[in-house]
Image (tube, rainbow, N blue to C red):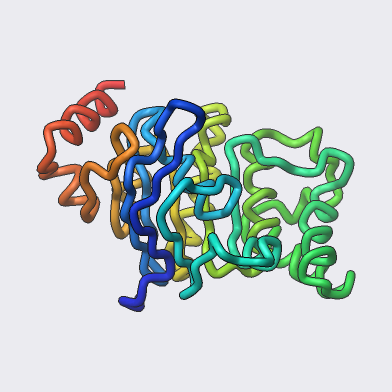
Length: 246
């Protein structure tokens, strides 16, 4: 793991109308690091992730990714091609089958041949355990399977950074494990990942660093052992206690 930050965020502020959602966030992620963002709903976790992917534009501050201030980038699509994003609701193309879902972005954005796109798609579908469903209509597969296809589709773009926004929150409990298993596997392969999650055990097992956000700020961060076993902040301790009692 390199010490060079792949993502550097300085004093990010973001409001929606009169509601200030991010209140001066400073946040770094090193190359090869897996960082889990935890906190109550409305604490700013998803908004921070969406700013990193330029789905939201901060009101002020600097976001540097791959050594460039992305808020000044002229080509958002070229930047996004290097950053994989998995959402709560999968965002698959409903009019395409599983294989086509994984091929189309490669052909359109990376401009690679149909044959190469298919090779990549089959490779990553196998990686997430969805190869047998390559020709399935996405409307007919389960939520857990859809999320695994969404992860495969993101991996097909060979991103340098993967962002996950509550990837298991829309899933039935029995499907959560299959998606987390795929993400655990990715974590062991050195892919840089930022994961917004409410799965505390997953964060303990997989994260190099856990960041607790509260009311639009980073309240505390540390290794899973530091944060879960010896939280310094009373707010962190109260959140973890409530999470454990669910």
